[in-house]
Structure formats: C-alpha cells, structure tokens
Length: 348
Image (tube, rainbow, N blue to C red):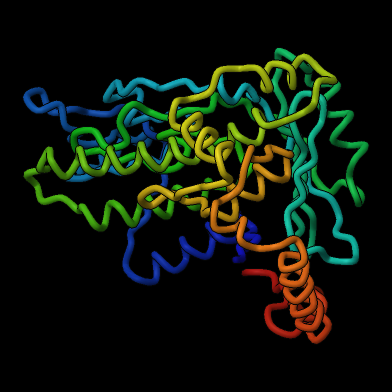
C-alpha cells in the first residue's frame, strides 16, 4: 500500500486550471444572501456582494467551516463528536526541508494531542493538534516550534474545529463537500479522500430536476457510514493508549466508545480477528497495525494457527524478512527516485 503527499494548495490550483480549460466558468464574489424557494425550500440563487445573482438547479456547498448553504441557509444541524475526539485546535507552520527525504508522514504524541510532520520535496508541513481544555495556545506553540527539523518559513497559524459532521450531507438541492459537511482531525489525513469520495458518490447518484428522495437518502446513508468508520479508526488511536502521564490521555484511555468500535475490539480481543465491513476506508492491515502497535494483544489466536509450531512461524517470518531486504537493497532512495521521475517545478 502507498499514499501520496500532496501540496494541497498546488493541487487546488491545478484542478482549478484544468476545470477552466474544460469549460467550467468561475465567478468570483462574496455571498451575502441565499434565496430559497418559498414552496419547496430549495435554493434558488445566491446573491453576491457585487449585486450579481447566481442561480442554479444543484448547489454544492464548499464554503468551509461556515457551511453557508447547507448549515446556515438550509438549517442542517451539526453532530458533535468531541466527547470521543476531544482535540479542538491545531497550530500549523511550514519549515525548510532536510535530508534524508523521508517517504512517510510522522505523527508524534504529545501530552494533550499530537504533532504531524509531512515532508514534501521543497518543504516540510508541520502542525500540533491539541485539546484546548488540557493545553493553552502558548504551550502548544512552544512544543511545535521546538520540534521542527528546519527553519520556519511561514508564520504559525491557529485553527479551531469541532470534530463531527452535518446531520445530512445532501439536503434538498444542496450537496456539501469538505469542511462544509464536517471535520475529521487529520490524524489519518482523510480530508482530500472525503472530498473525492463525496464527488464520486454524487456522480453515481447525480439527480434529475426531480431530486428523488431515495437517491438523496442513499447518498446520506453511505456518507454517514464513511464518516463513522473513519471516526472509529481515529478513536482507536487515542483509546488504545497505555499513557497515563496527563489528564488528556487518562480521559482518552477511560472514555466510553461507540458500539461499532466496541464490537471491533471484542472480535479482535477474542482471537485476533478483524473483518472489514462494506466499503470501509481502512483495510485490515491498518487496524491490525494500530491494535498491535498499541499493544492491544488478543487473548487467543485463530484455531488453525495453532497447527503451526514456533519454529514454523519463525522460519516463515525469516523468509519474508529476507525477501523484503533483498527488494529494498535494489531500490533507489526516496530522494533519488523523486529526482529521476517527478522533481518539483514551480507552477505559473
């Protein structure tokens, strides 16, 4: 398995340029009013500060945390998950890149949250996610700035959030995407995925002007499942901790968890089994790595595994390790491969 480290700003710029080349018309402006149909409650148009009006049949709300269309205009409430995921703040800063260029994100736990380190070719993205009831901004900033690999290249930026989602992701003739429908803290970097999967789901269930309620319900059902399955995986990172050195980690270790996550715990604790349900984002190896990595060890093993002797198991692992070492020894470093295939270039 693998994933990409994207510069989100450059990715957005690339997609905007591509869309406009394919005929998408972009109208810049600040929305000051949303006009609803008096009978259906559907959005008729949005009024811009310039006086221009933009009407349409289908509206996609990408207005960020404010949720201007779905939340404010259509009144869709927010489901708050902060009792399970209590981090509510982040401070982000960029710094100079360093060698060796690492091919992975590093997440480091701190006393009231964790710090991300995401290397790109030309810089490193850093941030400290923390819970404000357990740590103030000054302490969080000091931890972040004292744990950078290179010289800061931007001013630190503070972000406030509440983990959760809108009760509906599609309501009437409005579909929300991105922060307009919810926020999952970036412990597993799911934001771009959630946008992409929302777009794919909308294409699958693209409406006629009749806006069939069954299609909208299906969209909301599948999106809610995706959010909840990601939520459970994030909660596992916190709840499975053995840390008892701060009030934050004591809370996370002892808090109640959703029934859906408790079921996964129970099946795992029995004989080390995990079953991926439906179209869950995270695969079996991901869950197993977090369970075992946090020393959640099952009480027993699969019955068939007991047919193997300890020597059989050691021999198998030795052979796997040998194959991996042989493969890695023939590969270039991450920096060498990047330079050969996709070296960074400034976009115009």
